[in-house]
Amino acid sequence: MLFNSLAFLIFFAGVVLFYFLIPWRWRWAFLLLVSYVFYASWNLHFFWSIILTTLICYGVGLQMAATKDQRRRRCFLLVGILLNIGILFSFKLLNAAFKNILVPVGISFYTFQAIGYIIDVYWGK
Image (cartoon, rainbow, N blue to C red; front, side, top):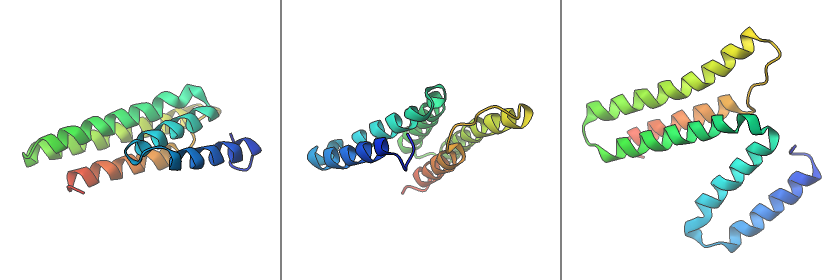
C-alpha cells in the first residue's frame, strides 16, 4: 500500500476514526496492530523482521525495568543493541552479496528507533 494511493487514504481515515472511538487505554495496542497490518501489506515475507525486533525490544525493556543492578542493565542494553544491529546487518550483508535481494522497507529506520527505545529504557525514560 503506497502512501499516495486511494487505498492508503481509506486505510488512514479508518485508523484515525477508530483511534478516537476506542478507549484511551487500548489506543497503543490498536496503533501497534495497524502498524503491523500496514507493514505486512507491503510484503508479508519480511513481517517476521519487525515482529522479531519488537519482541527483542520488549523483552530487553522488561528485563532492564525489572532489575536495579547496573551491570545487568548494561548487559541487557548491549544484548538488545547487538541483536537489533545483527538483524539490520544480516539484511544489508545479504543485499550486498546478492544485488537483487529485497530488503525490508524502513529496516534501518525502525532498527534505530528500536535501539533508541532500548537506550531510553536503560536511562529510565
